Amino acid sequence: MTVLVTGASGLLGGAVARVLVERGEDVRTLQRRPSGVAGAHDVAGSVTDAAAVARAVEGVDAVVHLAARVSLAGPRAEFDAVNVGGTTTLLDAAERAGAGRFVQVSSPSVAHGGSSLVGVGAQPADPAHARGDYARTKAAAELLALDRDGAMHVVAVRPHLVWGPGDTQLVERVLDRAARGRLPLLDHGAALIDTTYVDNAATGIVAALDRAPAVHGRAYVLTNGEPRTVADLLAGICRAGGVRPPAWRVPAALARAAGGAVEAAWRLRPGTDEPPMTRFLAEQLSTAHWFDQRATRADLRWTPAVTLDEGFARLAAHYRERGGR
Image (cartoon, rainbow, N blue to C red):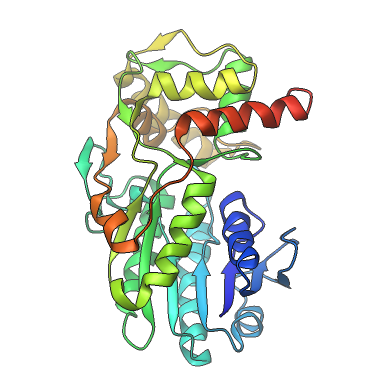
């Protein structure tokens, strides 16, 4: 197949593109900077640029859409423009180009209203109740994509908390804040949550691409299927990076209130990095969210190959090779 992968300069997008190249597909990528994926053909541009999107989709058989505005804060209009507008532009172009398959890479946050998610499957995306602009716009984008299922076989995949060597979204921020003593456990850090090692997320997305003719029109949550407590996960990342794990605690209710205040302040005067706390982040660190993987594995004919413990070992080896952080 000729497959377009958007957002291949990111950790997960790059991993997906490499899996496809390694098995012999003709891979094209679309993002604003070079993907760094050997064997892929880069098209420079944004999903918000209709001309660049048209060039990227010309002659493709399938699209895997990962490009998104990912942040805990920022101008609302930017989330709408990239996550909703960009997805619409890509869907329109893919249909015109005659692409037969479209994998929308989404997020479990599209169905998270702030309460615990315990052993559930892929519940309906709910833009009205999703927490924060990222989740809200990803929910809207998923619904837009699934609504196009017909001539194109569309599947939505929601990998949960993807991490691995080279990750700047989760791993590096955890290590940086822990090293500076700014990473607390909310309550006792006992909330049970799922995560996904990056190699597993990539092969799961490719499995959805392969299975699209049989499972189109559906959404799947994708995880390692190994729920751990927040304290255990943070400790595993910190040990791999040579940083002391967090030991001090903050009441979750206080963190939520502080997160709301920080969000308000950030809207008035944005910082140069992610805010130290938001209401969404406080909820994610203090409520359970783990998922039933039986339908995902059966329908996609996929199982994760890398356990969490093996993932932590690979992360530790990555930092040893670099001589530490």
